[in-house]
Length: 232
Image (tube, rainbow, N blue to C red; front, top):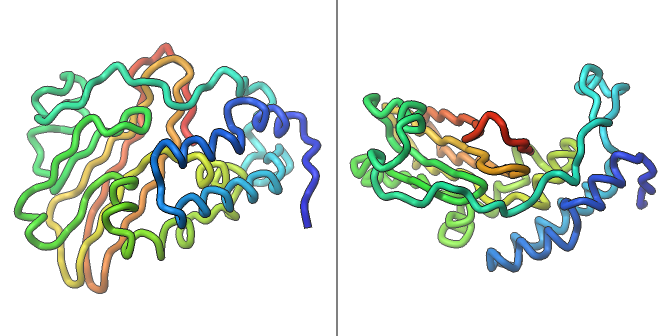
């Protein structure tokens, strides 16, 4: 059964940048495998059929979405930061966020869906641990990603915005830790918005095998305090 959406805010969000065509374009641009494209389509279907949350919904009873100007946001805003190979080449304020003097199993900076910096401790990699962006993982480690992505944790049916994320996510973090492997130091990902109207539609997937142990830190931030941005 298809639900007819009549909520004004919901119509606005669907006629802005968040469209079925945008989801299809993103899938084609990323050259996604068929199974992943199908998950996007399924996410969009749930999004269309799920009404926008209102103040009568318990999780949203103190948050009104009526004044959100959805048409002020944009997908695929190019970040001002260029990709770097060394932590020392990042701006000082971002290095400070990473606490560069503290040991880490791996670090990753994702800005507007693009990988700006990524590192993995070679000793950790030798244990069979994978720490990469989710788009790369979906292509190169399909056997680890496909059974779990959008099936467990936060499926599209969880909420209106979970469905939107499933349909329009651009990238994310993926960690795999083999059986009985314990990682001493944490992985640290910073997901950042950069530019006026930028959106961050990010997913995180951690697959830890039996008796594995891993710690993960994820920060969401804006590179500018003055720009309007949206994190879904």
